[in-house]
Image 1 (cartoon, helix red, strand yellow):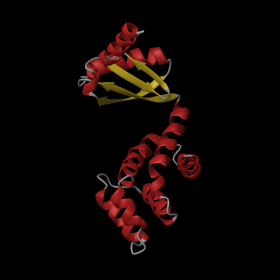
Image 2 (tube, rainbow, N blue to C red):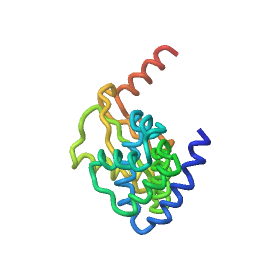
Image 3 (spheres, helix red, strand yellow):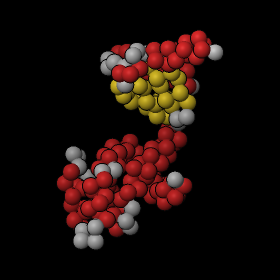
Image 4 (cartoon, rainbow, N blue to C red):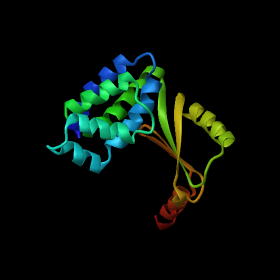
Length: 176
């Protein structure tokens, strides 16, 4: 998918430069835009020759949960005018990477079999930040198939302490 990344990069970099003062605020609406733009029905509507740029813009802003500021509106209009709506998820990914590099942090996804309360999450986050030696932006996703424990993904690094992984290790040891 080099083409996807190549096309999305200039948009992400320009948006990052324009919003260097508060990238977290931009991430809020950019993630929502990326989620909306990832819908197949919307992309099909946007690709229709009968749909104008204003109609596509109206549909997107109509389904957005939060109101877009002028900066976001201008960005969205530019993306629609240049027929780059399908690239919004990749633009958001690259923007997040730029924001993380500038703040010296990384995104971490914690997969857990059960919901994690705030106190336990704070303790786990502190331990993970120490383990990975950097500030982490943590999100939690439930995966009941893990049985217990957690699986943590930080960039291309994976720390798997789940029961499922331990059972797989035991299975490999017994069959080897």
